[in-house]
Figure 1 (cartoon, rainbow, N blue to C red):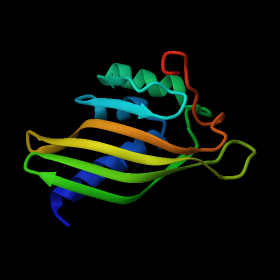
Figure 2 (figure 1 turned 120 degrees about the vertical axis):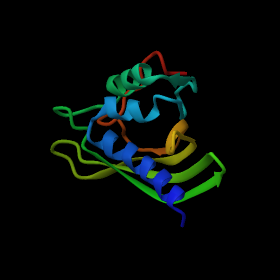
Figure 3 (figure 1 turned 180 degrees about the horizontal axis):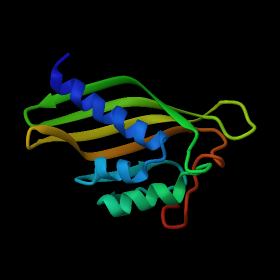
Figure 4 (figure 1 turned 90 degrees about the vertical axis):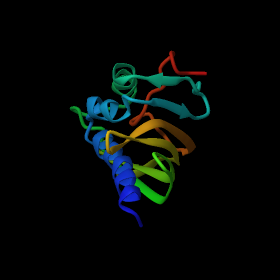
Amino acid sequence: MTIDAEQIRALTHEYTFRLDGGDFAGVAALLAAGALRMSAKGMDEQEMRGAEEIERFYANQVVTHDGDPRTRHVISNHVVDIDGEGAHGRCYFTVLMKPPRQPIQIVVCGRYFDTFERHEGAWRFLRKVIQVDYLTDISEHFLIDADHAA
């Protein structure tokens, strides 16, 4: 395991920590230099770019309870391939949620396909594709607004 691979994995984990904490501005800051694309049935696949657009996407679509999404993202099978100043990562994600007055439940499973670049000595996201593979009842977790519905 290289230090670069660990730094790249840490970026993916930081994304989930910020998302689970309801820090949508922080999520947008991590992705600001690149693009975000959601891929799921019932959702168009347009890319979002820039911190403002990405923050707005999360703020308008992630259901929160007093600012808390009440989620925990679990990352597994994280593979990182580095090629000089660029890198690609892929992994599985599972989102656990604890809605008020309900048990903990799995609400979504999928894959992240990420592209990174080394910029001024540090790694950053260039592109994040979120491929949703399986959903349960996401009504307490995520809304798909008209701008992103297919």
